[in-house]
Image 1 (cartoon, rainbow, N blue to C red):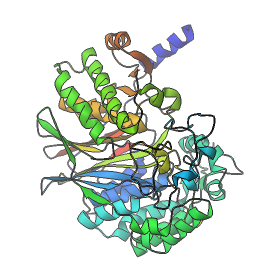
Image 2 (cartoon, rainbow, N blue to C red):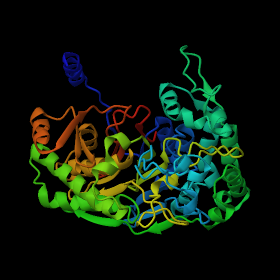
Image 3 (cartoon, rainbow, N blue to C red):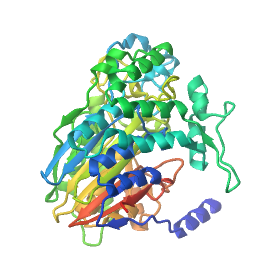
Image 4 (tube, rainbow, N blue to C red):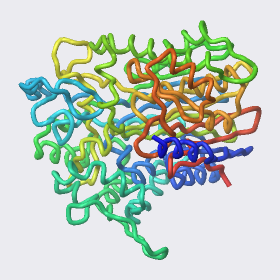
Length: 536
């Protein structure tokens, strides 16, 4: 006990900060600084916000392949300054049309699945890993739609940085080793996955020498990106690449077909407009966490009375109550009424998601979230194309009869929450995060920090947060003031945690802000690779 107390005291003495970047030019804030640099270079070369979105997104798929990539899906919330218009590009995943729910029988022991969602366990975990867990991916279609509608620069030019990165190979550092280690047992099941990410069946380790570097070759992925750059994005769905992806998945026992890929389209949707504190939050509608965020913000609007001194104990209690109410409402539609069983901490595994936010010199903004769902998605890499594929089938409840029950052709119910907000004082924010069900509570609080308390980006990103996505449990940052922590402890089933890399207790946001003609960007302080980069 004494050792734990001293550890907490030492932790509270640590001052870890990651300053926001401020510039009159454009800024990209991403979970990989190298990807953000690529986006900033595109802005400096005359590209606008969407050009940076495309280049950064493809680069992220190479640099952090456990988080996102061609095998995943996502959504973009865009603000176009000249037209003063907001729009959503939805490229979320969906179940293959030939999927048969009977191929996912539940185990007789009545146990719960071992990954992010505690659905009834399926025989051989067919919905969690391997080719049978793969939903139709949407990233190529989403980037295509954004590029076709708004980009200035050629498609080939925007993919060329990702091609170059794949040619260099995946750099093995301490974070790469941790990420690969977390999924190594499953990656070993599939020859192409093992070849891509393991050495002799084990996770690679970084080199001790400052001048020695270990890189994992990505030759197949490089060839795929080169092909996609040359032929255009629809080849992923209708050309030779589509045929090879479908053949690899079906050879492994999955149902994804060339027909599933050919039928897939990204959709432009009107954003969900959420009035808040004299401003408006523009969020993703339908099968995302946007509607859940809307529920939480409606409650905050009614219950939270902001003080001039910043969020106090009452504010954090309002945050907790709003999140818990919003998730109870969400889970009713998911067929799980009690919340605690579905969201208990013992079931919250790492979610595989990346978020990046962009603002350009003209004030165009984008909040982009892309995901494979679990860490390394299905853990299945297609042998011919080197694509790490999603496990989107895990989003569905394998128990029949519910609104989110597994069925052919059905769209996945997702947790991502990218938003662009316009505050009452005229600022604009692009916000999102990675972290599964912990994303929405973080986005809600960051919006409140800016819209209720007038915080700038650096203050907001460093301010302590809570998480209340685990049913009745409320997790508080140990950096919260003592009186706030004590007040939460008396009102809730309360636990404390540090903001840290592993295990993740809070989500990892990436944000940009525009105030007048000045832009700023910031990422979570404990995302080891994350950073905001301004154009040169």
